[in-house]
Amino acid sequence: MRVLCVGENILYGRPSEALSKAAVAGSLSLATSELSGVVETLRRSHYDIVVVQQSASDVRIVRQIRKGKISAPIVVVRRDGTATGEVELLTAGADDCVAETADHTVLLARLRAVIRRAGGHDSATLHIGRLTVGIERREVHIDAAVVPLTRKEYDLFVLLAMRKTQVLSKEVLLDSLYSGEDEPFGKVIDVMICKIRKKIRAFGIDEPFTTQWGIGYRLNESAFNPVTVTLPQEDYRIRPAVRENCLPVLAGINILGIVAPANRP
Image (cartoon, rainbow, N blue to C red; front, side, top):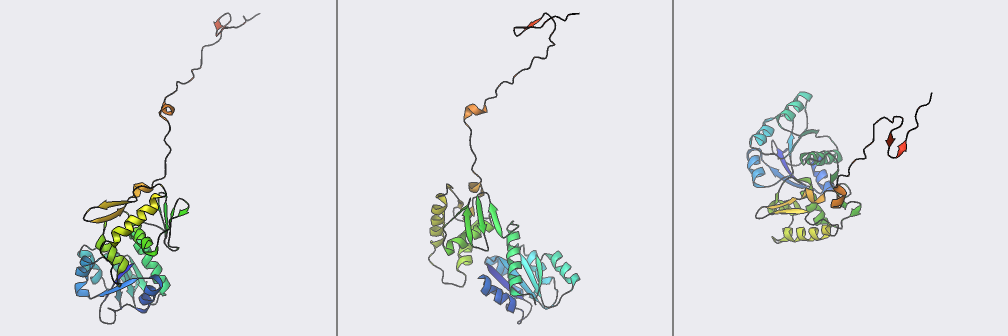
């Protein structure tokens, strides 16, 4: 998870204690930005979420980000704030507001929840057809079987699953996977995609990813659709319905070889 921390002054331009602890507990990649250059920073690099740190409610930075056509989710961490201020921040485009005194585990959970909802997922377990991704347990299942992914392969797969409708460039994937580390050679994403494909094909899924040449990769949702059984063609024939004879049976009339006895006085 790549987090851009934005503050209103030197003190609040640094990650708060709760955010710093959340970074350690949740393996977050933290970067900071000044207010004046935040929109350009977000346009130049990919971040999963923006954390705006404030001493009190102020909608200006949120509006600035949204006017810049930046769709990244925003969480505001406030030292002091009122209910009215929170309403104004959410109305301006913030996705959540958290008190500065909140425990780092709560902050981390809120950050994950906002990112998950931004990707169209409503729970910590992602369900995409036959595919199940357990975010907390860091496991990928197809049907009931675990897909044996390495740590980096899992991180790459989750990035694509969380943004299942988006094409992610190799630059974005590299930034997300290796931010703060020495980036490996440029083909590492292609190599990991190839290895993941091979592992998933063992489950009968031929093409788990869609490749946009010159752009990047996207999860192929339709590949994980439940397997359907195709009936033989002859089973689709329309069999004629059995017709019932509704004619009344009268005395002396032979119907189907049965003679009804005449009514006797």
